[in-house]
Amino acid sequence: MITSIDAFLRYFDAVHRRAVRDIAALPPEADGWRPAVGTGENAWSINQVIGHMAGSRLYFASAYAGNGWVSPRPPDVRSRAQWVPAIEASARALREALEGTPDAWLARKVAMIDSAGELSGWRVLMMMVEHDIHHRSQVDTYAGANGWDVPQIFDRSAETIERLQPGQRAKHGRDGQRAGGSQGG
View 1 (cartoon, rainbow, N blue to C red):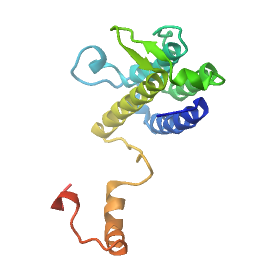
View 2: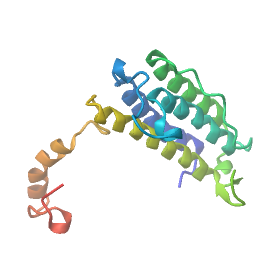
View 3: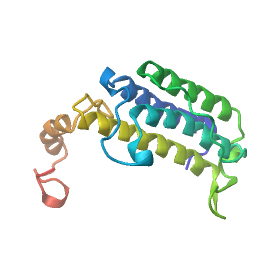
């Protein structure tokens, strides 16, 4: 559980940096790209997904601050040149909305938008982060499906980790088997 707003903001900053990195890595042909099939959110263009990410951060911040589950107007992301500035602006606005809020708000209950249930404030903030990561992964999936570069989450590919495994197994006295006894991926 997150116990201070400063700790949460440090965590969010890392998630945000990865969103900026992945969005900035998209090539010009990503501008306007959308899935060939689907309806509603499943048919959004990359532009729309990025605008949704930016706006949704403030939707969750509004709920956390006790101002209701209110969505701001989405930012203008009609062109690729607007994507990173929109995500950066949403991070600044989120920080402005949360900085200085009492740490006690992390434990206070927030009424849900669509049910009689309540969530702790820290959980509302974690929902925002999970939502951000979900849509970043959506954009990365679209990139991979189109053959565009997809940044590695921790600057290490699965192949790099696999190459390092023999040294780790030897160092820690482990046999050549992976967990579950399988050598496959």
